[in-house]
Length: 238
Image 1 (spheres, helix red, strand yellow):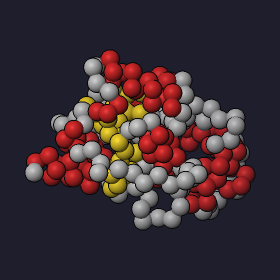
Image 2 (tube, one colour; image 1 turned 90 degrees about the vertical axis):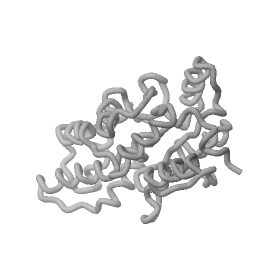
Image 3 (tube, helix red, strand yellow; image 1 turned 120 degrees about the vertical axis):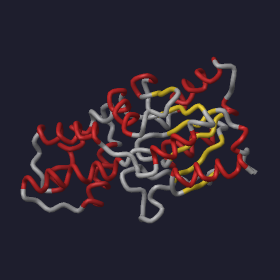
């Protein structure tokens, strides 16, 4: 049996892909470049190419890495391999939208828990993402703060230190994320209770997120943030 919602003090969150709809942001930006240059692209194929390029050995911090990624995938999409388009793809991250349910669900959850962001994005991007969904976080950890990216356990250890400094422990945390690879698998190994938000529940494959070596059955499973917030409200009010 999963630990009940009422027993947590913190909810930690993946941001990009769980709260921010980065796949739509990527596809929209690439489609705009395609339209400008008179090219038609397959958006799902673009996500696959992105995923492959994003996890090559020479990656840079995200979203700055989108410049390199664009130059890598542009020829395969028939797009011009010009740096200015890569820079426009990177800069568009500032205006990526939250999923329709993110802001409202986070506002509800913030009334019950301390919400902590755990994002592989750089600080400049995280600040834009947080503002987009109403700045709901009690604290935020980025790749700039930790010097690493999930699923590196060192990222999680920085959050554990923060929670311990407040007199609490990892047992007080429910980790919420859409990525099996970056979050759900490693959170299980580290002894966290986790909640999988399956944003691609009505689509095939893992989209722009790398596929895990093995699937991890989560403690909690929802297809939206709204469903999580509803379950918390119903359970605690009961």
